[in-house]
Length: 305
Image (tube, rainbow, N blue to C red; front, side, top):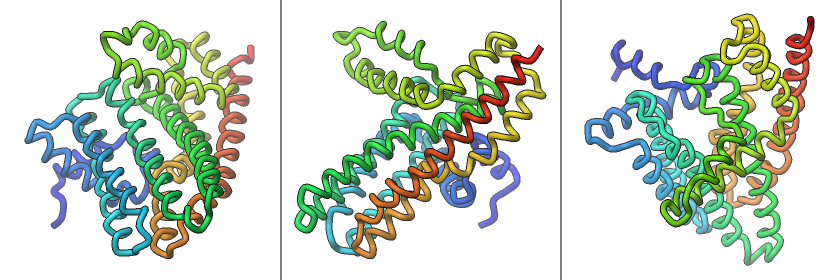
């Protein structure tokens, strides 16, 4: 059934931006997520509740992936697609109803981490009879690189949104205020929130350690312009940052999940680990080099008399 013009406008309004949306998201996950968001909104379900539900769907998918049976694996693939549709719906609902929150931002990141940690464990359990301890070492190495790849992709996407839409359109976090907030939270009174922010402060610190030239560039922008960044600088940053957005999408969910699904169905799930360590790491390094050069060049322009 063709979507009405009103609904199409509503769907597009629920995007983060057309610069950062991927083809599969635009044509599959976002339309599904939008209708789910409308449905959950009528029921009074909050975005954070949807996120928690997606976590359980991801864990269910991982359990299915531990079995060496393509039919059970297909059920797992369905669960993971279902979970990612919920992961799309929670953000769309938050933007549609202005229910963005600090906890929602952290939960959204934790959701993906729990999915893939569960999936890595499932793959290792599945291959242990054949590979022994070696598959656990490979899985641990893959998980380490995955965390770096996902963190930098998320960071560059939010940097792009900051220069495109301003602070209201971005979820860019800075390590110092996150660290100060963590210290202010009482472990005795709010233990869960304290634990979440322990992970989040390390997450943001890791992002900044990987982007030293951007940190200098952003410090120069704040010193010279504050939050009133000139349109010319915004436009130039967007022009040079936009080509990198396709790589941030490859490093997030859709591409890696497609490789995961194929490797499971042909009963060679180790291929997924190899793909992450080789292809995705090359993209990871390439993105950092390009973005740091962008930041270095624009810093020189800002500092010119």
